[in-house]
Image (cartoon, rainbow, N blue to C red; front, side):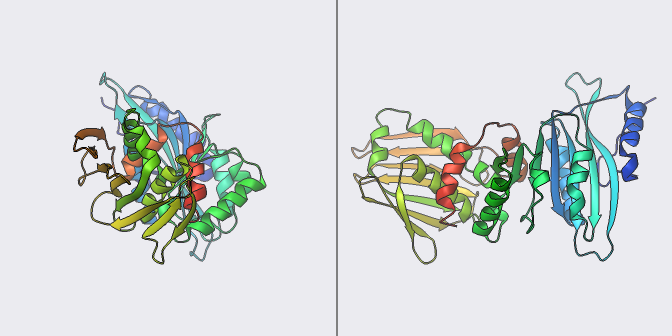
Length: 355
């Protein structure tokens, strides 16, 4: 006799908040012969609205195919008149390679109505899976007041700066909140993750010794980006400027052109162009001597095309991996990487003045 399948769509099995642990134990006792529980991290997600709750449940189902975790999904509806808290439990299961047993990850879902945001730290802390690291993905903009107790438990804070309406204000608030408690949180900006394959392709290209001197003679840089993704291109430009020690950025009225100064004072002009395609679809560097390094991505291609045109007429063509330019792909990329993102912080110091 086959065990009943685990619920896999929101909201799952409704439970009383105070009975979650007991109900989870019952769930595993009933299915223990057919499934094993897996968890390497705690992944807490904050979102707003029922549509976001459904969307994130589906996303968690896909993410758990590669990243075993206990998912704590917290959905709020702050405009509801009556304060209320509802909870559900569910599991996302995937057949192992042997095919004999399923590996499952738990999802705890909470719906907070009305003025209930003060409950978020208690909900998170009360339902963490042992001493596993805590990844908190905060979707959208941060609230006016951030709970310092919550940040004290978070190991990696995930967010997408491209979703913010006022990026400078959000970053200022985030810095202030973290500095207040001298937190050790690693900041993980999905907008930064979108640029990772361009950064890798450029770095690998200039590992070739004959190309490296051209970095010191750049005259202009062009970036093509999808509508609504200029901030992604600005982060990529800021990374290059930070690595080459450019200074004194000055942008034109609409932000489509930024002029940096090389250490010797010579200008390097960065131009941003909106075009259909991936979040960043082109990254071209040109030198004063007419040498160009062009990195492009066509549509949803899995590859970046790297074209090098030298002043003497010689050309080279290479392909580099491009990753997935989807939310699933970007989040997967971020979850499998560690480190403190120090280079991101250097780039952010420049980008913050350009947003």
